[in-house]
Amino acid sequence: MNNRVNLAGKRAIITGASSGIGFAIAKELARNGVSVALLARRERKLEENVREIVSNGGVADFVTVDLCDEEANCAAIAAAASKLDGLDILINAAGMAKQANLSDGDYEDWKAMLNLNVIALAVATREALPYFPKDGGHIVNISSMSGHRVPGKGGFYSATKFAVRAMTEGLRQELREADNPTRVSSISPGFVNTELLDHYFGGESSAYERIGHPILQPEEIADLVLHQLTMPKSAEVTDILVRPTAQRT
Ligand SMILES: NC(=O)c1ccc[n+]([C@@H]2O[C@H](COP(=O)([O-])OP(=O)(O)OC[C@H]3O[C@@H](n4cnc5c(N)ncnc54)[C@H](OP(=O)(O)O)[C@@H]3O)[C@@H](O)[C@H]2O)c1
Image (tube, rainbow, N blue to C red; front, side):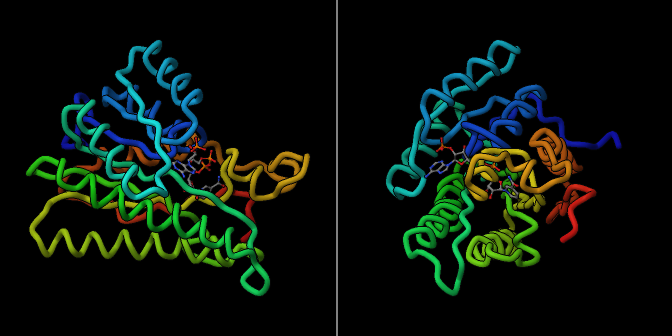
């Protein structure tokens, strides 16, 4: 395909870029000539990640933020767009997963997942939209297989990821209604080898040991996001479902 979108010179904000999928996407975009702004809470991680991207020839900066604070979220998107001198792409990767049952789960766990996975994503999206160029930007939400089916013990996390799917489609329809050509996509992975799984399963053993079969690598998700972003402008990839071949459910 020779009408693919050329990403060189574009500007992207990536939330949740201090680790895992967000950082892998930041690296992949930078490799493809995108100037990237990395957002998360852990300043030291963000500094290290930016240093790594820059030492590999990329253009990168960071903004430290707790996205669950609405005011801070708004200020961080504005600061990042200002550092980048505009914005073409928003990757909503910040997220968390806890095993919090619906039958006896902890209110604070529910609230934390809802605040970050759903509300903070909506705030970042709303704040980023005005910076996109007239001919459209692109938003990619990192959803989950758990936004398509409900895993045992993950009922509340799953509810937040079903919400991400609903928000992806809802925003798409709002933008089409407003004749705004900004594209909206999501990607819905199964198990990916990141810190999130270690927090989810807890304990001493690694996620890989718990799951007992090979799982996806964050770089594989980044590769698929690159595919979504570079599709010809006339095509919008709504969602990609991807899971380890060995994952049963
Ligand atoms: N790993 C999987 O198996 C899997 C599968 C499907 C979907 N996902 C989704 O993929 C996305 C990325 O997760 P991951 O697997 O890459 O895990 P991860 O390595 O734990 O990444 C989560 C990111 O979110 C950031 N974050 C957490 N709370 C935040 C807050 N209040 N404000 C700002 N940033 C915050 C973390 O940075 P700080 O701690 O520095 O703030 C980190 O950069 C999530 O939406 C997750 O639901 C993961």
